[in-house]
Image 1 (cartoon, one colour):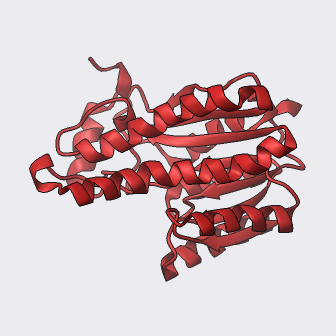
Image 2: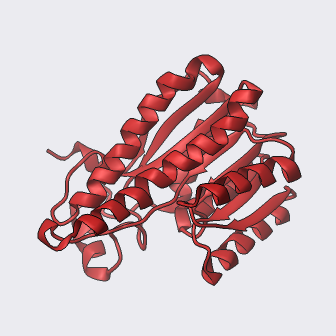
Length: 255
């Protein structure tokens, strides 16, 4: 299906230090896109993750960039977009896979911490969308994919700040879809289930509890998310905007 090909397209993926972000970046490269692999951490481990991801894209015969930045630094985000356009020629696709998990009771969550969780999960996505759209709107076309967890749709005890932030990403996606559709930019959310080692799944006990609850009795694998991301980034999804596609193993089917 030629509409699924990403040949001659350029993608920027935020959050390649996470397994899902990396899997998506590699899948986009496999589909034909050149990729800017961006780790949303300016620490050494972020640079290592970005370089490793970019090397994998190069090995697939694609051009790639490796960048590490603070996703809340507007100047750094704008510079990443500008460098992508300068070195790879254009920007057709943005994927926001950045994530800042946080779990604590409300009475233990200070207003400062609450603001940090909102900024780290919601403002960061806003800044990336805004920077990428500047280029895409000028081109007259672009695709944006914002990843959201189950907690964008469902509440969870001891995760009020995180749930609020991710729900914000979901409605930000819908609002931007209305704002940009007539100018050729489509934006959708990719909802993902529980992924081992990501989000709030950081220990064996939590993983075991989820495996007993989920219909498939296992967590989602990053590569299972990547295929849906390729579709949403492709011309096959040109008439789709403001929607959320869930890859969650039936978790939302529970009452």
